[in-house]
Image (cartoon, rainbow, N blue to C red; front, side, top):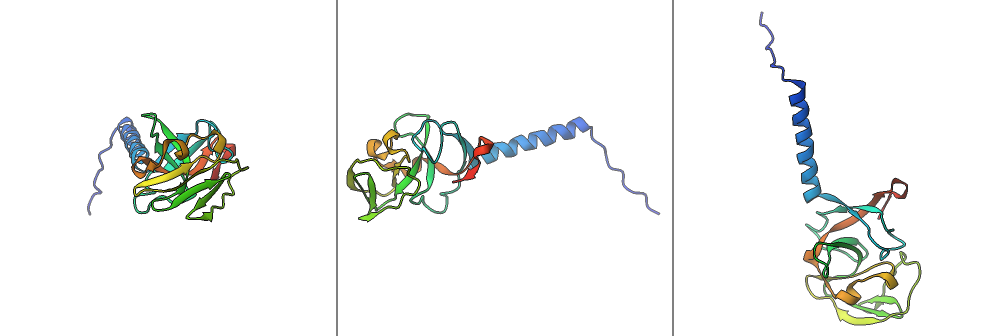
Length: 175
C-alpha cells in the first residue's frame, strides 16, 4: 500500500500576492498591447460620441489590415504632442477626396454618411490621399479640427480602432 504524496502547503497570503501580481501583469499587457480605454474630449464626434464618454480601442485592429472608410480611430495628435484624438476615417491611401457643399465625394462618388445629423456647406479638394496616410473628419463638421485643417494623417499615428462605448454604462453600445 502506498501513501499519498503530501503536498506542501503555502501560506494563503503568498498565494493571494501571486494571484494579484499575475492579474496586474496581465492587465498591463492587455492595456499596453491589446485594448485601452479612451475618454472622448470635446464635441467633434457628436452625435456619435459625446464629451466625457469612454470608448474601448482595439490596438491590434490594423496589424493585418489597414483602416477602412467609416471606422472610428484614435490617433496621436498631429499638432499637440502627447494628446490623442478621435475621428472617423473618410478616405484611405490612393483615394481622391473632395467636399462640395458639405457632401463628401470619394473618387467622384458621393459618400453615404448616415452618422451625420445635418450637412454644412463647405468645400475641400479634390486631393489624393498619399500612401501611408488617411483623411479623417469629425462627425460634427463645424466643430471639428480635422484633416481639412491639419492635412493628411499618417497611418503610423493611429493607435487603434474605437469599437464600443462603455461608459457611462447607460450609453453602452458598439460603434
